[in-house]
Amino acid sequence: MGHPWPMNILTKEAGQSRKLIVKPVDICPRSNFRPNADGHLRVVDVDKIKLHNTTVAIEVKEQGHFHYYCRTLLGEYRMFGRRTNVDGEYTDIMFKLCKMKRPGLPKGTVVAIEVIWPGHPDSEVPTAIKECPQELKMVALGVPIQAGIKYFDCDEDYKSAQRRMNGILPPEFHPKRLGFKKLGDKFETAEILEYYLKFAKNAGIEGVVFKEFGYDGWWKLKGVKEADVFITGFKISDSETQYGMVTAVNIGVVESIVYDEITIRNMGSITGFDLEEKDKMTGAYNIYGKSEENPYWMKPLRVLYQEIAGKGKLKHGFFDCWRDDKIWDQCTMEQFK
Image (cartoon, rainbow, N blue to C red; front, side):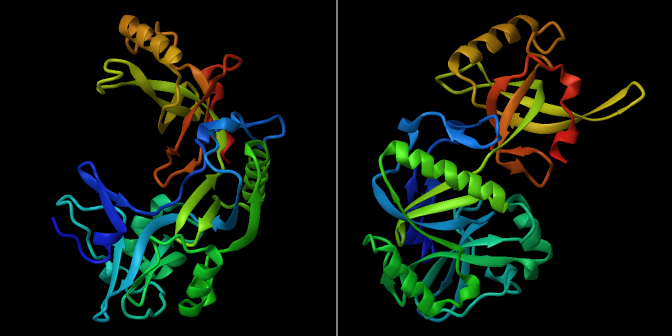
């Protein structure tokens, strides 16, 4: 199947689909961070950190959707997202975003961007694309192709890539840059990660991106939040390795109590249980199902998550610990206010 330029060279086959050649990846699993008594996140296992002993540029991580903003050699403007449609093809959505403020580009140029809706989570960006594209903003991440010349496969240093970006994009489209940092060994790197997680929390931003090169070696670091919820359902795996096991649970909180009427708010589902805990939950589910006799039914637990998505569910949530000191109706919506 053929794909339009530049998706034919900036993505590669991955099983039945395609993926970006360069994108920010997690510097370590989000489950590797735990809040201390002061509420600041700490690294649990330094061996899970994937990057150290190098110098990186640091940029603010915006909440948005990744796209390529392009101008072909013929002068046509295009916009492609990172995912294919139901037919397995990349769709040009420039016509949907023609009202979004955007800069002119030299012919044969591609800019990797984050499309953001200021003041809104990234889960609401698709709504803005349909209803109010003029409120969207693009933030440039890098310039993989400029005037027909490829820069994404040559390990170009960050400062050179920054100078190129400065030459074609007005400052309003640039990312917020936080300077450079030398990462030492894994223990020194852990301290730096903890510092920037605290910085992100205090600044009210999603996180930061560490960049080794201008268009390669991008590592993202996102903050996480915590909440107390309770189990409202069980998800049974149909995978080959964990078939029949409880590997995820549905969660909820109490939204309101009016006399004896309790309204439960669906907060989505979470994973992150170790094999021992999955075995215990599976055993209980096989005996009791979703009845009140199941010791895990309505059981309180603490989850770590990134944010509350547009539909009110927790985004990127995973299990932290059981809250045996609480009963389920003490887990309420008040904690999110």
